[in-house]
Length: 146
Figure 1 (spheres, rainbow, N blue to C red):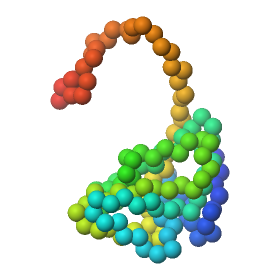
Figure 2 (spheres, rainbow, N blue to C red):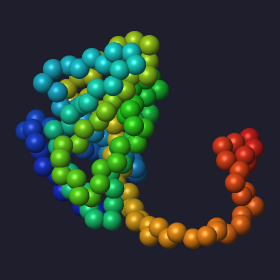
Figure 3 (cartoon, rainbow, N blue to C red):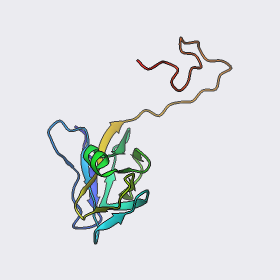
């Protein structure tokens, strides 16, 4: 288990929490001075009131909460937010409203989930040709529906 150090930038901020023993993501909570309404098709930045120190060799990945996305149409605008190991600012969630109705977020509401995952930084090497594969240059949808 990795230790992730954090700082409360707001004394009322809620520490990320895993809902179950085997949960992959820890819930992130909104820290708002008042309820925040996100109009249909709108994106708003939602504060969490915390900053984290992702360990070197890892990234913090901010994903949608499945219930919030499927029931209310609210999910991170960038689909997956990436918190680099050298970032020390406030964790913010760009929450987008995909629903046809305005949605209101309350202070302390769970807004996203944070997954701490290992990353590999690749060494990119230019070459004249690439090795051949069965797929070749087949792109979107080229491997069929099954």
